[in-house]
Amino acid sequence: MTMAESVEIRPNALMWLLGSAKTLLFGTLFCMTPVTAVIVLGWLMRRMRWQAGAEIAARPGWVMGARGSGWLSRLLGGFAANVREGVLAAFSLFLATIPFGAIWLLSWWAGWENSFSKGYEQAWVGPVLGLTGVVVFCVTMIWLPMAIVHQAVVNKALALFEWRRVRSVVRHTRWNYLMFAVVSVILALPLFGQRSLVVFASDLIPGFDNMSLQQVSGIASTVTLLTAGYVFVSLVILRGWSARVYARAVGRALKGPDAPLWQGIALATPAVGGRSWRLTHWVRAVFLAIIWFGLVTQIFVGQFMNHDWHLWVTHPFTLLPWAG
Image (cartoon, rainbow, N blue to C red):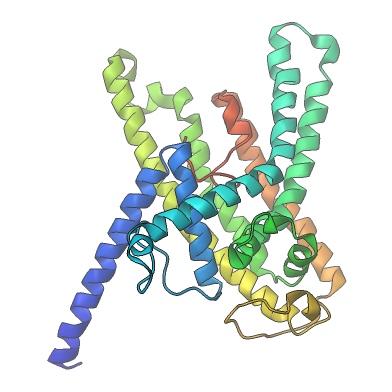
């Protein structure tokens, strides 16, 4: 490597580091509240579209728009796009996840909460509802990661529910989609630990029981900040991974019987593969449901340690990227 090449690379590396630090800062701070988490969701949607190879001018930013646009669009275009796509994605995800979330809320009320009122004659209602919600969750998670990428790529409201295309892309995934699910469940473990921290705080933090309210509040804020950073980094990894899985699956579908479904799709991914075998598709679906049961276990066990009701209906990996 010549001296000139070395000098040229260093500024590029420095700019990359500064850009990454800025992205981490914005992402972490925005993941700390449910309102600003919508902005992060929109940014992730635009980033998935870019990583899937869809037609997008440049890597999406937080505030500024693309070069060459009008001055107002250049100044705030990125922020406006993040808000717009975040709201649309949040609405779609809410519609997709509220069935099992609402069932779990009813299960919690009819089971654990009902037991405090001595309503033992209806004791069976809670477990039955809970198991029903588990089944709905596991089935939903077979297709939801690909569905949200699909909405990002086509950039259209409620595209998450374009069932024929979503089913096609899931059918044309390969075993790396199972590995994606496994890693997702593993990366969710620290979030399970964070939700359970309230129970073990006295054992983990010396002198916690004797701390003032202000000190406890400071610890809680620090934990929230660290959790927000972890949520953001995890989702950058997982959403990028799912975008690449989606792009490859669409490339395979374009070479098989499902090709008419994907005419006009704007992806720069080479079309490879072809027919999806029905047997392997169903085997993968069963394995996916089993894998996602691991996340259900974390949610249920964590709820017995932290009774906040909203934890039933929102998880950073399924709805809003919120560290709450």
